[in-house]
Length: 153
Image: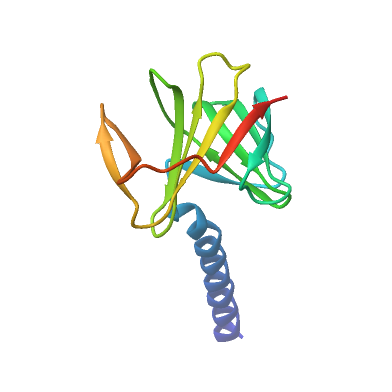
């Protein structure tokens, strides 16, 4: 009997460990942000946007306040992503993130939050991760146009 319970305990331990790995895997690949579940609710929504351009269907964009600071929240029907890396320059406030083996993303929000923001997608091989002023960020290796304009609602 003792041997059977030890075997069952190991099996549950293995299942729990595998579940932990699977849940953490996706978020391990995203840098500069956090993947969220569909039920995530930001502390405060600062601006809601309507997207025009090439974006996934049924996706909403929000400038939000989190415990870490401001972020862009890209929310689909079943999940979301917070783009938390942030810096400012003459173009406005930038938010970025990237997937280690795939695309880089950057959002540029003008200081005047009533004006449209821009979403950029940098394909794998067309951006480098560069640390500028202590902030690692995706930097395109050539000129890339925005894929979408985010219009404040």
